[in-house]
Image (cartoon, rainbow, N blue to C red):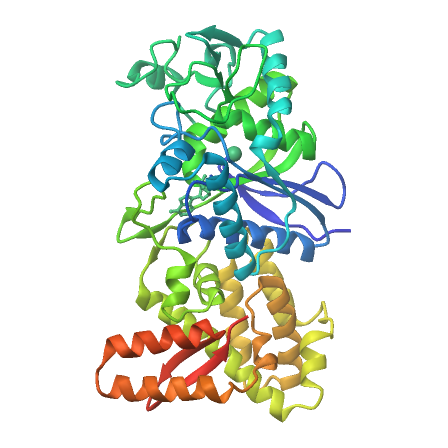
Length: 473
Ligand code: AMP
Ligand code: ZN
């Protein structure tokens, strides 16, 4: 029997007990990256939240079916149907084909995924490999009278779907009345959206497929409905994404899926709040954004970022700053150092950390579970962990067991405490030279030496009167 877990459901605006469709199984679909650029650290925050969801459900006793899609066609620069095709724009700017752009940034995305210790989702599906599934779903909608053709494109008629906008609590009349200045004149209602484009605005559209409506390509929203139902069924438990997806993308996914299947579709909708830079939204299309490699080039470990993210609840906005990232890095390092100290003072420390299961009745374990099972309150769980770590009355062997369990549950990379090895002399020498350069305030030389150290697989951290080298993992 799985433990009871509670989530805040955007659909009902309430925290609810998770009741899966099938006992002991949780089926999750998460909107994945649009691969026209590197993922920024805001996008990565959302995937960390979804990974936490996956891990917590497993800890609670569920078998998790987790699907992530890759949007490699059809996502325009606005979430609606206005704007340019993101892939074409990027291909033009970089002088590459759209296919190469997609391949390149998909690989880059999954490198970040691994570096952050995100679990293998099980299914990763590319939109371009599921065009026939999308066509079949559009045909189903067409047979049921939810579509119309205009100007060569196929549109979803939102007026035919009475529940339209229930996720975003949209006021239909207001939304329709507002209209949009740049709205497509073919649309019967401002909120209608394209299911299949044949009349591309872009003469250089390279990704096109034959369809019953002519050669063209799918709209963005239909991708997720087609792929999620293919892998998880026409009803599944949880759908996730960032909060930006509530008013358009997820609203449209619900409309077309429930219209096609004829019944309620997804039970729980979980949305991660944004990571912001000084009150600004971080946007991938603005060209000015932070990536994980920017952070690692400054000497942060990817897990420092993960720890920073987990220190905020997924439903609160998180403001990024290097000061806050430094605090997270120090917190994580402090845990690693305490573990390293216990390693030398406690017999069988590694066995306790890596192999011992925790006692379900342990008060700390119960508290951390209650934090996490209550809408994924990771910051509270970390607070509970820290209280235990600092409690001198708790013996080291109990701490080691709990820390090992939390490390596997939250994926913090604390196990590095057991994997430290000394740096080769070449790297030590570079670090000493860098220390000298810093003393002379020769920052450009110090930066160059840091790059050389990192290219050899080590990271260097400044500590009072010295440095510390760590092997990158
Ligand atoms: P995209 O690649 O733009 O389709 O976005 C991938 C995921 O990142 C989606 O779930 C978005 O909702 C989410 N996202 C976009 N920007 C941010 C941000 N600044 N903070 C957190 N999540 C974001
Ligand atoms: Zn989606």
